[in-house]
Every structure is written in structure tokens, then in C-alpha cells.
Amino acid sequence: MQIISIAGTTGRDAEYKTTQSGAEMCSTSVAVNGYANGEKTTTWYDVTSWGKGSEGLARMLRKGSKIACSGELSTREHNGKTYLQVRTNGITVQGTPAGGTDAPQEPQRSSRQAPVDDLADLDDVPFATNNAIW
Image (tube, rainbow, N blue to C red):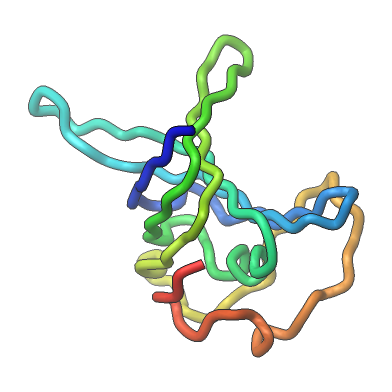
């Protein structure tokens, strides 16, 4: 198993899904900037968080959110391209998008997902601020 820690900017609003067995997940893409040979580089990761709290997390993560996370690194191939994936153990929201708000919003739901009842009010979600660790 390979564990990685990254800090970057979300490239899209987070998406909330539930599996047929009822497992919850939140996914987004994260851009991590760096420098190689004096030039700016950007590496993209598909980040997925599983378990209780995924819906609340999806409400927090908007395109442009600053996050840090750690988890298991893997790759997948699709149409000849290699994608980097991180299955997180925890996500820390470091800031909201420019011009954004700290107020949680309704999560984007996958069109392939069957409707689910809201699991809890935001007051029941296990975080108090944007700086919570999942």
C-alpha cells in the first residue's frame, strides 16, 4: 500500500453518492501545483472519501476549495490515460473558493444514484468549522 499526503485546490464541486449496499462516498478532483526544472507543474488527483460524514463533506467542497488530505494512492487506466486516485483517510478543508461562502450547500448528487433520504441536519454532521479533520 502507498500512502500519500496532498494539499491543493478542488477542480470541481464534490459529488455525493451512495452505493447499492448503502455505503456513502464523496468524490472530487484536486490540483496540486509544484515546480520542476523551473517550470510550474500541476498534478491532478481523483480524491474519494468514504463513510459517515461524506454528505456533509460534499456540502463543504466547492470548486476552488483549498484542502489537504492523506490516503491510499492508486492508479486506473481509461482510454489510454492514467489517472491518480487517493482514497482518503481524512480531509482538512483549508479555505473556501475566492468569493465563496463558508455556508454549506446542497451536495451535487450523481445522476446514477437512487434518491436517498437526508441522513441528518447539518447540526448532526460531525464538524463545527471549515478546519475540521475528517
